[in-house]
Length: 404
Length: 222
Image (cartoon, rainbow over all chains, first blue to last red; front, side, top):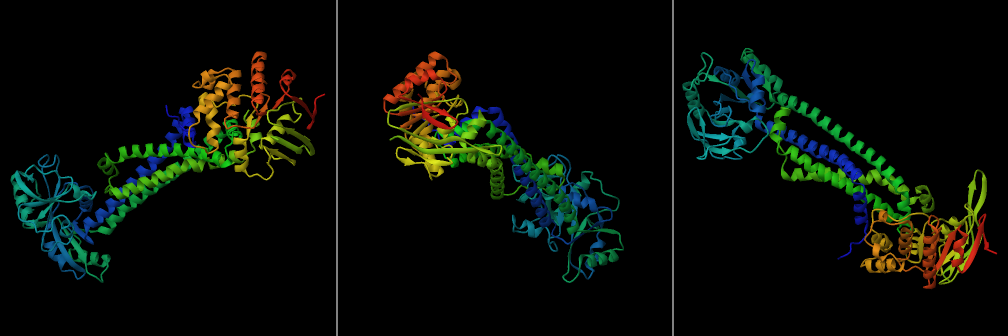
Protein backbone atom coordinates (compact mmCIF):
# COMPACT_ATOMS: atom_id res chain seq x y z
CA UNK A 1 0.00 0.00 0.00
CA UNK A 2 1.44 3.43 -0.92
CA UNK A 3 1.75 5.69 2.08
CA UNK A 4 0.35 9.19 2.07
CA UNK A 5 2.66 12.02 3.11
CA UNK A 6 1.44 14.01 6.10
CA UNK A 7 1.66 17.30 4.26
CA UNK A 8 -0.16 20.44 5.34
CA UNK A 9 -2.76 19.56 2.72
CA UNK A 10 -3.46 16.16 4.31
CA UNK A 11 -3.28 17.44 7.88
CA UNK A 12 -5.78 20.17 7.01
CA UNK A 13 -8.17 17.69 5.39
CA UNK A 14 -7.86 15.24 8.29
CA UNK A 15 -8.68 17.98 10.73
CA UNK A 16 -11.69 19.11 8.72
CA UNK A 17 -12.91 15.51 8.65
CA UNK A 18 -12.47 15.25 12.40
CA UNK A 19 -15.13 17.90 13.00
CA UNK A 20 -17.72 17.26 10.28
CA UNK A 21 -20.48 19.36 11.82
CA UNK A 22 -18.24 22.39 12.28
CA UNK A 23 -16.81 21.94 8.78
CA UNK A 24 -20.25 21.71 7.14
CA UNK A 25 -21.56 24.65 9.13
CA UNK A 26 -18.64 26.82 7.98
CA UNK A 27 -19.01 25.56 4.42
CA UNK A 28 -22.68 26.56 4.53
CA UNK A 29 -21.80 30.09 5.68
CA UNK A 30 -19.32 30.61 2.85
CA UNK A 31 -21.65 28.89 0.38
CA UNK A 32 -24.37 31.37 1.28
CA UNK A 33 -21.93 34.21 0.70
CA UNK A 34 -20.82 32.82 -2.67
CA UNK A 35 -24.47 32.25 -3.61
CA UNK A 36 -25.28 35.90 -2.98
CA UNK A 37 -22.10 37.16 -4.66
CA UNK A 38 -22.39 35.06 -7.80
CA UNK A 39 -26.18 34.91 -8.11
CA UNK A 40 -26.52 38.61 -7.29
CA UNK A 41 -23.80 39.69 -9.71
CA UNK A 42 -25.23 37.61 -12.56
CA UNK A 43 -28.67 39.08 -11.88
CA UNK A 44 -27.38 42.65 -11.79
CA UNK A 45 -25.41 42.18 -15.00
CA UNK A 46 -28.45 40.54 -16.62
CA UNK A 47 -30.56 43.55 -15.72
CA UNK A 48 -27.90 45.95 -17.02
CA UNK A 49 -27.73 43.94 -20.23
CA UNK A 50 -31.49 44.11 -20.46
CA UNK A 51 -31.39 47.90 -20.18
CA UNK A 52 -28.70 48.05 -22.86
CA UNK A 53 -30.86 45.80 -25.04
CA UNK A 54 -33.84 48.05 -24.46
CA UNK A 55 -31.83 51.14 -25.43
CA UNK A 56 -30.69 49.45 -28.61
CA UNK A 57 -34.19 48.23 -29.29
CA UNK A 58 -35.90 51.60 -28.87
CA UNK A 59 -33.59 53.54 -31.13
CA UNK A 60 -35.88 56.59 -31.35
CA UNK A 61 -35.60 59.77 -29.29
CA UNK A 62 -39.35 60.16 -29.00
CA UNK A 63 -42.27 57.80 -29.58
CA UNK A 64 -45.68 59.26 -30.29
CA UNK A 65 -48.62 57.07 -29.26
CA UNK A 66 -52.36 57.70 -28.83
CA UNK A 67 -53.28 59.61 -25.72
CA UNK A 68 -53.27 57.40 -22.61
CA UNK A 69 -51.28 54.57 -24.19
CA UNK A 70 -47.78 55.38 -22.96
CA UNK A 71 -47.89 52.48 -20.47
CA UNK A 72 -49.06 50.12 -23.21
CA UNK A 73 -46.03 51.14 -25.26
CA UNK A 74 -43.75 50.29 -22.33
CA UNK A 75 -45.58 46.96 -22.02
CA UNK A 76 -44.85 46.11 -25.64
CA UNK A 77 -41.25 47.32 -25.59
CA UNK A 78 -40.15 45.97 -22.22
CA UNK A 79 -42.31 42.93 -21.60
CA UNK A 80 -43.62 42.00 -25.04
CA UNK A 81 -47.20 42.36 -23.89
CA UNK A 82 -49.52 41.83 -26.86
CA UNK A 83 -51.69 44.86 -27.36
CA UNK A 84 -52.85 47.15 -30.07
CA UNK A 85 -53.82 50.78 -30.07
CA UNK A 86 -54.34 53.15 -32.92
CA UNK A 87 -54.44 56.83 -33.82
CA UNK A 88 -55.28 58.67 -36.94
CA UNK A 89 -52.66 58.35 -39.70
CA UNK A 90 -52.82 62.14 -40.20
CA UNK A 91 -50.81 62.53 -37.02
CA UNK A 92 -47.79 61.29 -38.98
CA UNK A 93 -47.89 64.27 -41.32
CA UNK A 94 -48.39 66.61 -38.37
CA UNK A 95 -45.32 65.21 -36.64
CA UNK A 96 -43.27 65.25 -39.85
CA UNK A 97 -44.10 68.92 -40.29
CA UNK A 98 -42.26 69.86 -37.08
CA UNK A 99 -38.94 71.57 -37.64
CA UNK A 100 -37.30 69.66 -34.80
CA UNK A 101 -38.23 66.29 -36.28
CA UNK A 102 -35.60 64.80 -38.57
CA UNK A 103 -37.32 61.45 -39.21
CA UNK A 104 -40.77 60.21 -38.24
CA UNK A 105 -41.53 56.58 -39.00
CA UNK A 106 -44.90 54.93 -38.36
CA UNK A 107 -45.49 51.51 -36.83
CA UNK A 108 -48.61 49.36 -36.76
CA UNK A 109 -49.19 46.93 -33.90
CA UNK A 110 -51.23 43.74 -33.91
CA UNK A 111 -51.55 40.93 -31.43
CA UNK A 112 -51.71 37.32 -32.57
CA UNK A 113 -54.46 34.97 -31.45
CA UNK A 114 -53.82 32.79 -28.41
CA UNK A 115 -52.13 29.44 -29.01
CA UNK A 116 -51.89 30.02 -32.71
CA UNK A 117 -48.16 30.13 -33.16
CA UNK A 118 -46.60 30.40 -29.78
CA UNK A 119 -48.90 29.10 -27.10
CA UNK A 120 -49.95 32.60 -26.21
CA UNK A 121 -50.67 35.87 -27.94
CA UNK A 122 -47.59 37.80 -29.13
CA UNK A 123 -47.10 41.33 -30.46
CA UNK A 124 -46.65 41.77 -34.21
CA UNK A 125 -45.00 45.05 -35.13
CA UNK A 126 -45.21 46.44 -38.62
CA UNK A 127 -42.72 49.08 -39.76
CA UNK A 128 -42.34 51.22 -42.86
CA UNK A 129 -39.12 50.11 -44.61
CA UNK A 130 -38.78 53.47 -46.36
CA UNK A 131 -38.65 55.62 -43.23
CA UNK A 132 -37.77 53.11 -40.52
CA UNK A 133 -34.62 53.84 -38.55
CA UNK A 134 -35.24 51.78 -35.40
CA UNK A 135 -36.08 48.20 -36.43
CA UNK A 136 -34.07 47.66 -39.63
CA UNK A 137 -30.62 48.76 -38.39
CA UNK A 138 -31.08 46.37 -35.54
CA UNK A 139 -32.40 43.37 -37.52
CA UNK A 140 -29.70 43.73 -40.19
CA UNK A 141 -27.38 42.09 -37.65
CA UNK A 142 -29.29 38.87 -38.38
CA UNK A 143 -30.91 39.61 -41.75
CA UNK A 144 -29.32 42.00 -44.19
CA UNK A 145 -31.78 41.64 -47.10
CA UNK A 146 -35.06 43.51 -47.39
CA UNK A 147 -38.15 41.64 -46.28
CA UNK A 148 -40.52 40.40 -48.96
CA UNK A 149 -44.27 40.40 -48.50
CA UNK A 150 -45.22 37.42 -46.31
CA UNK A 151 -41.85 37.30 -44.54
CA UNK A 152 -41.44 37.86 -40.82
CA UNK A 153 -38.54 38.38 -38.43
CA UNK A 154 -39.15 36.69 -35.08
CA UNK A 155 -37.81 37.32 -31.59
CA UNK A 156 -35.55 34.76 -29.95
CA UNK A 157 -38.35 33.11 -27.97
CA UNK A 158 -40.77 32.65 -30.87
CA UNK A 159 -40.83 29.04 -32.02
CA UNK A 160 -41.34 28.49 -35.74
CA UNK A 161 -43.00 25.41 -37.22
CA UNK A 162 -40.83 22.68 -38.75
CA UNK A 163 -41.24 24.17 -42.22
CA UNK A 164 -39.80 27.50 -41.02
CA UNK A 165 -43.13 29.36 -40.91
CA UNK A 166 -45.34 30.78 -38.18
CA UNK A 167 -49.10 30.70 -38.19
CA UNK A 168 -50.97 33.96 -37.69
CA UNK A 169 -54.73 34.31 -38.19
CA UNK A 170 -54.89 31.03 -40.13
CA UNK A 171 -52.08 31.87 -42.56
CA UNK A 172 -48.44 30.74 -42.57
CA UNK A 173 -45.70 33.37 -42.75
CA UNK A 174 -42.14 32.58 -43.66
CA UNK A 175 -39.59 33.25 -40.89
CA UNK A 176 -36.79 35.16 -42.61
CA UNK A 177 -34.59 35.41 -39.53
CA UNK A 178 -34.53 35.01 -35.80
CA UNK A 179 -33.19 37.84 -33.64
CA UNK A 180 -30.68 37.32 -30.87
CA UNK A 181 -31.93 37.44 -27.33
CA UNK A 182 -32.25 40.98 -25.97
CA UNK A 183 -33.97 40.41 -22.64
CA UNK A 184 -36.74 42.83 -23.72
CA UNK A 185 -40.21 42.46 -25.19
CA UNK A 186 -38.55 42.01 -28.60
CA UNK A 187 -37.77 38.40 -27.66
CA UNK A 188 -41.46 37.51 -27.85
CA UNK A 189 -42.38 39.88 -30.69
CA UNK A 190 -42.54 39.55 -34.48
CA UNK A 191 -41.51 42.24 -36.94
CA UNK A 192 -42.58 42.70 -40.50
CA UNK A 193 -43.16 45.34 -43.14
CA UNK A 194 -46.34 47.37 -43.53
CA UNK A 195 -47.22 45.29 -46.64
CA UNK A 196 -47.34 42.10 -44.61
CA UNK A 197 -49.06 43.85 -41.73
CA UNK A 198 -51.82 44.77 -44.15
CA UNK A 199 -52.38 41.06 -44.88
CA UNK A 200 -52.29 40.26 -41.19
CA UNK A 201 -54.77 43.06 -40.44
CA UNK A 202 -57.24 41.77 -43.03
CA UNK A 203 -56.90 38.19 -41.78
CA UNK A 204 -57.36 39.42 -38.20
CA UNK A 205 -60.56 41.19 -39.19
CA UNK A 206 -61.81 38.04 -40.92
CA UNK A 207 -61.04 35.99 -37.82
CA UNK A 208 -63.12 38.39 -35.78
CA UNK A 209 -60.40 40.45 -34.05
CA UNK A 210 -61.93 43.53 -32.46
CA UNK A 211 -60.91 46.95 -33.75
CA UNK A 212 -62.45 50.19 -32.56
CA UNK A 213 -65.01 51.70 -34.82
CA UNK A 214 -63.41 53.64 -37.62
CA UNK A 215 -60.05 51.99 -37.29
CA UNK A 216 -58.78 50.62 -40.59
CA UNK A 217 -55.37 49.75 -41.84
CA UNK A 218 -55.55 52.53 -44.35
CA UNK A 219 -56.31 55.35 -41.91
CA UNK A 220 -54.55 54.21 -38.72
CA UNK A 221 -51.11 53.77 -37.20
CA UNK A 222 -50.08 52.67 -33.70
CA UNK A 223 -47.00 54.77 -33.04
CA UNK A 224 -44.53 57.13 -34.62
CA UNK A 225 -40.82 56.71 -33.94
CA UNK A 226 -39.16 60.12 -34.02
CA UNK A 227 -35.53 61.10 -34.44
CA UNK A 228 -34.91 64.68 -33.29
CA UNK A 229 -32.90 66.92 -35.58
CA UNK A 230 -29.47 68.04 -34.36
CA UNK A 231 -29.61 71.39 -32.66
CA UNK A 232 -33.01 70.75 -31.08
CA UNK A 233 -33.57 69.45 -27.61
CA UNK A 234 -36.03 66.70 -26.80
CA UNK A 235 -38.14 69.19 -24.92
CA UNK A 236 -38.26 71.53 -27.91
CA UNK A 237 -39.21 68.64 -30.19
CA UNK A 238 -41.86 67.41 -27.77
CA UNK A 239 -43.28 70.93 -27.53
CA UNK A 240 -43.49 71.29 -31.31
CA UNK A 241 -45.16 67.88 -31.66
CA UNK A 242 -47.63 68.69 -28.92
CA UNK A 243 -48.58 71.91 -30.68
CA UNK A 244 -48.74 70.29 -34.12
CA UNK A 245 -51.03 67.51 -32.85
CA UNK A 246 -53.04 69.84 -30.61
CA UNK A 247 -52.17 67.70 -27.61
CA UNK A 248 -54.17 64.71 -28.77
CA UNK A 249 -51.27 62.28 -28.48
CA UNK A 250 -48.92 60.98 -25.85
CA UNK A 251 -45.28 61.93 -26.34
CA UNK A 252 -42.94 59.43 -24.79
CA UNK A 253 -39.30 60.40 -24.41
CA UNK A 254 -37.54 57.04 -24.62
CA UNK A 255 -34.66 58.11 -22.40
CA UNK A 256 -37.17 58.75 -19.62
CA UNK A 257 -38.62 55.28 -20.13
CA UNK A 258 -35.10 53.82 -19.90
CA UNK A 259 -34.29 56.01 -16.92
CA UNK A 260 -37.38 54.85 -15.07
CA UNK A 261 -36.40 51.22 -15.65
CA UNK A 262 -32.74 52.03 -14.92
CA UNK A 263 -33.76 53.77 -11.72
CA UNK A 264 -35.49 50.59 -10.55
CA UNK A 265 -32.37 48.65 -11.57
CA UNK A 266 -30.16 50.94 -9.54
CA UNK A 267 -32.37 50.24 -6.55
CA UNK A 268 -32.23 46.48 -7.12
CA UNK A 269 -28.48 46.52 -7.83
CA UNK A 270 -27.77 48.71 -4.82
CA UNK A 271 -29.82 46.39 -2.62
CA UNK A 272 -28.05 43.31 -3.93
CA UNK A 273 -24.60 44.87 -3.47
CA UNK A 274 -25.49 45.90 0.08
CA UNK A 275 -26.74 42.38 0.85
CA UNK A 276 -23.57 40.87 -0.67
CA UNK A 277 -21.38 43.27 1.35
CA UNK A 278 -23.24 42.52 4.57
CA UNK A 279 -22.97 38.79 3.91
CA UNK A 280 -19.25 39.11 3.26
CA UNK A 281 -18.68 40.99 6.50
CA UNK A 282 -20.93 38.61 8.43
CA UNK A 283 -19.14 35.58 7.02
CA UNK A 284 -15.80 37.20 7.85
CA UNK A 285 -16.88 37.97 11.42
CA UNK A 286 -18.42 34.55 11.96
CA UNK A 287 -15.42 32.71 10.56
CA UNK A 288 -13.05 34.88 12.60
CA UNK A 289 -14.88 33.95 15.78
CA UNK A 290 -15.00 30.26 14.91
CA UNK A 291 -11.32 30.12 13.89
CA UNK A 292 -10.31 31.99 16.98
CA UNK A 293 -12.28 29.64 19.24
CA UNK A 294 -10.96 26.62 17.36
CA UNK A 295 -7.38 27.85 17.61
CA UNK A 296 -7.85 28.19 21.36
CA UNK A 297 -9.26 24.66 21.57
CA UNK A 298 -6.29 23.34 19.62
CA UNK A 299 -3.51 25.15 21.47
CA UNK A 300 -2.05 21.93 22.75
CA UNK A 301 -2.06 20.39 19.30
CA UNK A 302 -0.31 23.40 17.77
CA UNK A 303 2.22 23.45 20.60
CA UNK A 304 2.91 19.80 19.90
CA UNK A 305 3.53 20.56 16.23
CA UNK A 306 6.12 23.15 17.31
CA UNK A 307 7.72 20.64 19.66
CA UNK A 308 7.96 18.13 16.83
CA UNK A 309 9.77 20.64 14.64
CA UNK A 310 7.13 22.67 12.80
CA UNK A 311 8.27 26.24 12.19
CA UNK A 312 6.04 29.19 13.06
CA UNK A 313 5.55 29.71 9.33
CA UNK A 314 4.51 26.10 8.80
CA UNK A 315 2.02 26.32 11.65
CA UNK A 316 0.58 29.54 10.31
CA UNK A 317 0.25 28.03 6.84
CA UNK A 318 -1.50 24.98 8.23
CA UNK A 319 -4.15 27.13 9.91
CA UNK A 320 -4.57 29.32 6.82
CA UNK A 321 -4.81 26.25 4.59
CA UNK A 322 -7.63 24.77 6.63
CA UNK A 323 -9.48 28.06 6.42
CA UNK A 324 -8.78 28.29 2.70
CA UNK A 325 -10.19 24.81 2.06
CA UNK A 326 -13.35 25.68 3.93
CA UNK A 327 -13.84 28.93 2.08
CA UNK A 328 -12.94 27.46 -1.31
CA UNK A 329 -15.25 24.48 -0.76
CA UNK A 330 -18.04 26.77 0.39
CA UNK A 331 -17.38 29.08 -2.53
CA UNK A 332 -17.63 26.28 -5.09
CA UNK A 333 -20.77 24.93 -3.43
CA UNK A 334 -22.39 28.38 -3.32
CA UNK A 335 -21.54 29.18 -6.93
CA UNK A 336 -22.91 25.82 -8.08
CA UNK A 337 -26.15 26.35 -6.19
CA UNK A 338 -26.43 29.91 -7.52
CA UNK A 339 -25.82 28.64 -11.07
CA UNK A 340 -28.59 26.08 -10.59
CA UNK A 341 -30.92 28.82 -9.42
CA UNK A 342 -30.01 31.65 -11.79
CA UNK A 343 -29.47 29.99 -15.17
CA UNK A 344 -32.40 27.57 -15.57
CA UNK A 345 -34.81 30.13 -14.13
CA UNK A 346 -33.51 33.24 -15.87
CA UNK A 347 -36.73 33.80 -17.83
CA UNK A 348 -38.82 33.39 -14.68
CA UNK A 349 -36.56 35.77 -12.73
CA UNK A 350 -36.78 38.36 -15.51
CA UNK A 351 -40.59 38.07 -15.48
CA UNK A 352 -40.77 38.35 -11.70
CA UNK A 353 -38.51 41.41 -11.65
CA UNK A 354 -40.59 43.01 -14.39
CA UNK A 355 -37.52 44.45 -16.05
CA UNK A 356 -35.52 43.69 -19.19
CA UNK A 357 -33.30 40.75 -18.27
CA UNK A 358 -30.54 39.28 -20.43
CA UNK A 359 -27.89 36.86 -19.13
CA UNK A 360 -24.31 38.01 -19.78
CA UNK A 361 -22.06 36.13 -22.23
CA UNK A 362 -19.98 33.12 -21.21
CA UNK A 363 -16.78 35.19 -20.84
CA UNK A 364 -18.44 37.63 -18.49
CA UNK A 365 -20.08 34.82 -16.51
CA UNK A 366 -16.66 33.21 -16.09
CA UNK A 367 -15.25 36.52 -14.87
CA UNK A 368 -18.07 36.89 -12.33
CA UNK A 369 -17.53 33.27 -11.30
CA UNK A 370 -13.78 33.83 -10.76
CA UNK A 371 -14.46 37.04 -8.84
CA UNK A 372 -17.06 35.39 -6.61
CA UNK A 373 -14.80 32.41 -5.95
CA UNK A 374 -11.87 34.70 -5.21
CA UNK A 375 -13.84 36.78 -2.71
CA UNK A 376 -15.29 33.65 -1.07
CA UNK A 377 -11.98 31.83 -0.99
CA UNK A 378 -10.23 34.88 0.47
CA UNK A 379 -12.78 35.02 3.27
CA UNK A 380 -11.36 32.03 5.19
CA UNK A 381 -7.67 33.00 5.16
CA UNK A 382 -8.58 36.61 6.00
CA UNK A 383 -10.78 35.49 8.88
CA UNK A 384 -8.17 33.10 10.24
CA UNK A 385 -5.14 35.37 9.71
CA UNK A 386 -5.34 36.81 13.22
CA UNK A 387 -5.71 33.39 14.86
CA UNK A 388 -2.85 32.01 12.74
CA UNK A 389 -0.58 34.92 13.63
CA UNK A 390 -1.43 34.71 17.30
CA UNK A 391 -0.96 30.97 17.65
CA UNK A 392 2.23 30.82 15.60
CA UNK A 393 3.86 33.64 17.57
CA UNK A 394 2.92 32.36 20.99
CA UNK A 395 5.62 30.76 23.13
CA UNK A 396 5.12 27.04 22.80
CA UNK A 397 5.72 26.34 26.45
CA UNK A 398 2.92 28.67 27.52
CA UNK A 399 0.61 27.51 24.72
CA UNK A 400 1.10 23.92 25.82
CA UNK A 401 0.27 24.76 29.41
CA UNK A 402 -2.77 26.88 28.44
CA UNK A 403 -4.02 24.05 26.24
CA UNK A 404 -3.98 21.54 29.04
CA UNK B 1 29.05 15.72 24.35
CA UNK B 2 25.34 15.49 23.50
CA UNK B 3 24.10 18.19 25.86
CA UNK B 4 25.98 21.06 27.43
CA UNK B 5 24.16 23.58 29.60
CA UNK B 6 26.23 26.45 31.01
CA UNK B 7 25.05 28.81 33.70
CA UNK B 8 21.49 28.81 32.41
CA UNK B 9 18.97 31.22 33.88
CA UNK B 10 15.30 31.95 33.32
CA UNK B 11 13.88 34.84 35.22
CA UNK B 12 10.19 35.65 35.65
CA UNK B 13 8.41 38.36 37.56
CA UNK B 14 5.64 37.55 39.99
CA UNK B 15 3.89 40.69 41.10
CA UNK B 16 6.75 43.18 41.19
CA UNK B 17 9.26 40.65 42.43
CA UNK B 18 11.61 38.97 39.97
CA UNK B 19 12.56 35.37 40.62
CA UNK B 20 14.59 32.69 38.91
CA UNK B 21 12.61 29.65 37.68
CA UNK B 22 15.98 28.30 36.51
CA UNK B 23 18.88 29.66 38.50
CA UNK B 24 22.38 29.40 37.01
CA UNK B 25 22.04 25.74 36.01
CA UNK B 26 24.90 23.83 34.39
CA UNK B 27 24.64 20.28 33.09
CA UNK B 28 26.39 18.00 30.62
CA UNK B 29 25.27 14.69 29.15
CA UNK B 30 27.12 12.16 27.06
CA UNK B 31 25.79 9.76 24.46
CA UNK B 32 23.78 6.92 26.02
CA UNK B 33 23.61 8.58 29.42
CA UNK B 34 20.33 8.41 31.38
CA UNK B 35 19.82 11.36 33.72
CA UNK B 36 16.80 11.83 36.00
CA UNK B 37 15.90 15.19 37.48
CA UNK B 38 13.63 15.12 40.50
CA UNK B 39 12.02 17.92 42.40
CA UNK B 40 8.78 19.26 43.76
CA UNK B 41 6.14 20.87 41.62
CA UNK B 42 7.20 24.43 40.76
CA UNK B 43 10.87 23.74 41.32
CA UNK B 44 11.68 24.66 37.72
CA UNK B 45 12.09 21.17 36.18
CA UNK B 46 9.71 21.66 33.26
CA UNK B 47 11.06 25.16 32.60
CA UNK B 48 14.56 23.71 32.35
CA UNK B 49 13.42 21.05 29.86
CA UNK B 50 11.63 23.66 27.75
CA UNK B 51 14.73 25.83 27.71
CA UNK B 52 16.80 22.84 26.57
CA UNK B 53 14.22 22.10 23.87
CA UNK B 54 14.45 25.68 22.63
CA UNK B 55 10.81 26.33 23.44
CA UNK B 56 11.69 29.11 25.87
CA UNK B 57 14.35 31.79 25.58
CA UNK B 58 16.79 31.82 28.49
CA UNK B 59 17.47 35.02 30.38
CA UNK B 60 21.16 34.11 30.48
CA UNK B 61 23.48 31.18 29.87
CA UNK B 62 24.05 28.87 26.96
CA UNK B 63 22.75 25.53 25.71
CA UNK B 64 24.64 23.36 23.23
CA UNK B 65 23.13 20.27 21.67
CA UNK B 66 25.58 18.04 19.80
CA UNK B 67 27.99 20.95 19.84
CA UNK B 68 25.60 23.52 18.38
CA UNK B 69 24.66 26.50 20.50
CA UNK B 70 20.97 27.41 20.58
CA UNK B 71 21.85 31.06 21.26
CA UNK B 72 20.99 33.24 18.30
CA UNK B 73 19.33 30.46 16.34
CA UNK B 74 16.35 31.68 14.33
CA UNK B 75 13.00 29.89 14.38
CA UNK B 76 13.79 27.74 11.35
CA UNK B 77 17.10 26.55 12.82
CA UNK B 78 15.57 25.89 16.25
CA UNK B 79 12.69 23.98 14.69
CA UNK B 80 15.12 21.94 12.61
CA UNK B 81 17.14 21.19 15.73
CA UNK B 82 14.02 20.03 17.59
CA UNK B 83 13.10 17.93 14.63
CA UNK B 84 16.44 16.22 14.11
CA UNK B 85 18.61 16.29 17.23
CA UNK B 86 16.18 16.37 20.09
CA UNK B 87 13.10 14.29 20.83
CA UNK B 88 10.77 15.85 23.35
CA UNK B 89 7.96 14.01 25.12
CA UNK B 90 5.79 16.61 26.87
CA UNK B 91 3.83 16.04 30.01
CA UNK B 92 0.44 14.32 29.70
CA UNK B 93 -1.33 12.82 26.71
CA UNK B 94 -0.12 14.41 23.49
CA UNK B 95 -1.06 11.87 20.83
CA UNK B 96 -3.22 13.40 18.08
CA UNK B 97 -6.67 11.86 18.09
CA UNK B 98 -7.42 12.23 14.38
CA UNK B 99 -4.28 10.37 13.25
CA UNK B 100 -3.61 6.66 13.50
CA UNK B 101 -0.81 5.47 15.76
CA UNK B 102 1.43 5.03 12.72
CA UNK B 103 0.67 8.53 11.40
CA UNK B 104 1.30 10.03 14.84
CA UNK B 105 4.78 8.53 14.77
CA UNK B 106 5.40 9.56 11.15
CA UNK B 107 4.37 13.17 11.76
CA UNK B 108 7.80 14.68 12.72
CA UNK B 109 9.29 13.25 9.53
CA UNK B 110 7.19 15.70 7.49
CA UNK B 111 7.88 18.71 9.72
CA UNK B 112 11.48 18.37 8.60
CA UNK B 113 10.41 18.96 4.99
CA UNK B 114 11.55 15.48 4.04
CA UNK B 115 10.09 13.50 1.20
CA UNK B 116 10.01 9.77 0.62
CA UNK B 117 8.72 6.87 2.67
CA UNK B 118 8.47 7.09 6.44
CA UNK B 119 6.30 4.12 7.36
CA UNK B 120 9.08 1.54 7.65
CA UNK B 121 11.01 3.62 10.16
CA UNK B 122 7.82 4.35 12.11
CA UNK B 123 6.84 0.67 12.19
CA UNK B 124 10.35 -0.27 13.41
CA UNK B 125 10.03 2.25 16.23
CA UNK B 126 6.59 0.96 17.18
CA UNK B 127 8.06 -2.57 17.29
CA UNK B 128 10.90 -1.28 19.48
CA UNK B 129 8.49 0.27 21.97
CA UNK B 130 6.40 -2.91 21.89
CA UNK B 131 3.22 -1.75 20.14
CA UNK B 132 3.88 -2.68 16.52
CA UNK B 133 0.54 -4.44 16.37
CA UNK B 134 -1.28 -1.16 17.12
CA UNK B 135 0.06 0.76 14.10
CA UNK B 136 -3.34 1.05 12.45
CA UNK B 137 -5.27 1.84 15.62
CA UNK B 138 -6.66 5.21 16.61
CA UNK B 139 -5.45 6.75 19.89
CA UNK B 140 -8.86 6.38 21.54
CA UNK B 141 -8.44 2.61 21.33
CA UNK B 142 -5.18 2.67 23.33
CA UNK B 143 -4.42 2.56 27.06
CA UNK B 144 -2.43 5.26 28.88
CA UNK B 145 0.77 3.22 28.77
CA UNK B 146 0.38 2.49 25.08
CA UNK B 147 -0.20 6.18 24.37
CA UNK B 148 3.01 7.03 26.23
CA UNK B 149 4.88 4.49 24.08
CA UNK B 150 3.48 6.19 20.96
CA UNK B 151 4.80 9.55 22.23
CA UNK B 152 8.24 8.05 22.84
CA UNK B 153 8.37 6.39 19.41
CA UNK B 154 7.28 9.69 17.82
CA UNK B 155 10.01 11.60 19.68
CA UNK B 156 12.61 9.24 18.24
CA UNK B 157 11.30 9.23 14.67
CA UNK B 158 13.98 11.48 13.24
CA UNK B 159 17.04 9.72 14.78
CA UNK B 160 17.49 11.90 17.82
CA UNK B 161 20.61 12.04 19.89
CA UNK B 162 18.80 13.37 22.90
CA UNK B 163 15.45 12.26 24.28
CA UNK B 164 13.87 14.67 26.76
CA UNK B 165 10.84 13.53 28.76
CA UNK B 166 8.66 15.57 31.10
CA UNK B 167 7.16 13.25 33.72
CA UNK B 168 6.68 10.31 31.36
CA UNK B 169 5.08 8.11 34.02
CA UNK B 170 3.06 10.78 35.82
CA UNK B 171 -0.37 9.28 35.21
CA UNK B 172 0.52 5.59 34.84
CA UNK B 173 -0.01 2.62 37.13
CA UNK B 174 3.07 1.00 38.77
CA UNK B 175 3.31 -1.90 36.35
CA UNK B 176 3.08 0.31 33.26
CA UNK B 177 5.55 2.70 34.88
CA UNK B 178 8.04 -0.14 35.18
CA UNK B 179 7.55 -1.09 31.53
CA UNK B 180 8.06 2.50 30.34
CA UNK B 181 11.17 2.93 32.50
CA UNK B 182 12.61 -0.33 31.17
CA UNK B 183 11.93 0.94 27.67
CA UNK B 184 13.75 4.21 28.36
CA UNK B 185 16.67 2.30 29.88
CA UNK B 186 16.89 0.26 26.69
CA UNK B 187 16.79 3.43 24.56
CA UNK B 188 19.67 4.89 26.57
CA UNK B 189 21.63 1.67 26.20
CA UNK B 190 21.20 1.88 22.44
CA UNK B 191 23.08 5.22 22.50
CA UNK B 192 20.46 7.96 22.87
CA UNK B 193 21.02 10.29 25.81
CA UNK B 194 17.86 10.34 27.95
CA UNK B 195 16.97 13.29 30.18
CA UNK B 196 13.88 12.73 32.28
CA UNK B 197 12.08 14.93 34.73
CA UNK B 198 10.00 13.18 37.38
CA UNK B 199 8.70 13.56 40.87
CA UNK B 200 8.46 9.80 41.37
CA UNK B 201 11.49 8.66 43.29
CA UNK B 202 10.86 5.01 42.32
CA UNK B 203 11.79 5.72 38.73
CA UNK B 204 15.18 7.23 39.47
CA UNK B 205 16.77 3.80 39.87
CA UNK B 206 16.75 3.36 36.10
CA UNK B 207 19.02 6.34 35.48
CA UNK B 208 22.79 6.69 35.56
CA UNK B 209 22.59 9.94 37.50
CA UNK B 210 19.94 11.62 39.58
CA UNK B 211 19.86 15.39 39.93
CA UNK B 212 17.59 17.39 42.17
CA UNK B 213 16.03 20.71 41.37
CA UNK B 214 14.97 23.07 44.11
CA UNK B 215 13.92 26.70 43.61
CA UNK B 216 15.54 26.75 40.18
CA UNK B 217 18.89 25.37 41.32
CA UNK B 218 20.14 22.02 40.09
CA UNK B 219 22.38 19.84 42.19
CA UNK B 220 23.36 16.17 42.42
CA UNK B 221 21.03 14.18 44.66
CA UNK B 222 22.89 13.00 47.65
